[in-house]
Image (cartoon, rainbow, N blue to C red; front, side, top):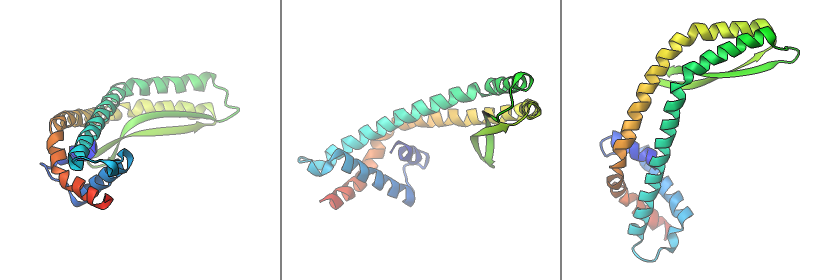
Length: 188
């Protein structure tokens, strides 16, 4: 529900049709999980309080996830340099009688305006492959640094949006009361 509340804030207090359906399904799931069918006194008010709690809880989760992602992004370049160094050491001292799997992650562009964290997993069969992979990382680290910096800007913007959304949770839930009533109508 917190993701939908964030979308609601970004879209100036409106949800698209698909988002409203997602909200209805989320509220219906909450109704089933929390046993709203047994609510005796003012069910909409009680359900609204539950929706507020769930949305606030989701907001806290979003805040933690974004903070973790920002921390990971801040250390990404040093991790890449460490990976290249490890591959160089592996090339010099590694035993390649069995294939060696090596993974590292970096920021990549998925589309014109979308950045993601991409995990590369290599299966190294000989020392030269490890040397070549280390060289590739060292060669691309500057490009990945630029993409990482762009992604940090986006993540910090999302953090600000989540902070702004926290104060909008009551208004979001109030706007969702019609959906809560619809869910109750289907329950009874």
